[in-house]
Amino acid sequence: MIGDFLERMLTRCPWHLRAMGYLREAIGIRGRYRRCQQHWQSHIDHCHQIIRQAIGRCAKRRTAVVLGAGLLHDVPLVELSRSFQKILLVDIVHPFWSRWQTRRFKNVQRVSADVSNIVEELFWVSDEPDKPLPKSKPDLFLDRTDIDLTISINLLSQLPCMPMGYLVWHGAHTPEEIDAFARDVMQAHLDYLERLPGKVVLITDIERIKIDLSNRIVEVTDLLFGLKLPKAGEEWEWKLAPCPEADPRHHFYRRVVGIADF
Figure (tube, rainbow, N blue to C red):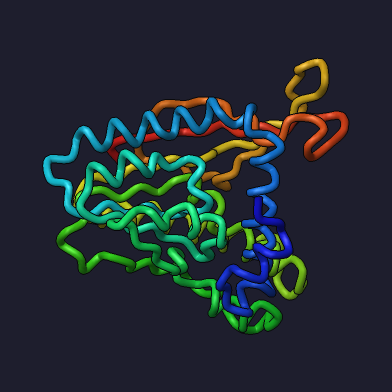
């Protein structure tokens, strides 16, 4: 199995994304998956089920797009590849491991793109308090007419995470400004999904749940900063970081919503 150091060396990643921690985060997620795979399996199964429902609702099956493809743990790539003429896997960083995994799929193409369309601009203004933070204006694939399915998978709440951490590190903006920025990025993504052609799937975590060793919930954090999803969907618990993965005395789980027809 490829080591983390080699993964960093072999993964193509622009220097500003490395500086903001995107590659480090991707490699960290892969490590957590290896350690917690058994606990993640129910979440992965739910993701696959929602996506299968959406595939079955597609009258045409030309191009499918996966936004936030990442390490592909939660993507039923074999079924997508068999069902559609072309698959576009979109992420801001494609770790070498995921590129290696897709090498045998002739109709799968990786697209390196910032879905929020703000990360590089934010990199340059993050330490300048007098400059406004960029507004997210996603436009990827809006001019395409051959896309019959788009899947936004475990991405919505993650879009502002690395930028927020980078802003906090620079310390040039208030917590209120950073929270407003996060809400803007997520609302822009929801609006963007509604403008895309074809069927759209949204799978996203909406709450972080902190649980002590007696299984008592001690804290619930709204990951959407007050935003409400426009549609209801199936809900489940993702055992993201069971004790002692992130804390020797607490589990950190997520509540997830999957909408097969957004």
